[in-house]
Length: 86
Image 1 (tube, rainbow, N blue to C red):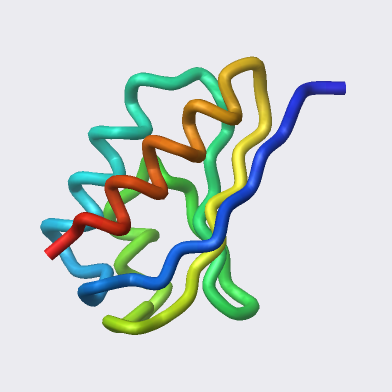
Image 2 (cartoon, helix red, strand yellow):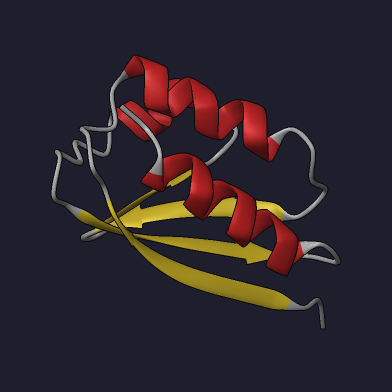
């Protein structure tokens, strides 16, 4: 069984093109499978279009979930990218 990790982030800005791109760039450095969950929807952190389709607005709470050898580091990096997005 692969290690997994999870974190909750309150978005300071809507998950539009620029923040989604930052998440995708951050995810590129990891081998873990990384998902962003918002309500009943989820999207790969490696796809800007899928991230934007979540419809998460500023103030929304999302969950970052990763599974794999570098899951903990991946969750930390993605959570930081989301928390600093504008």
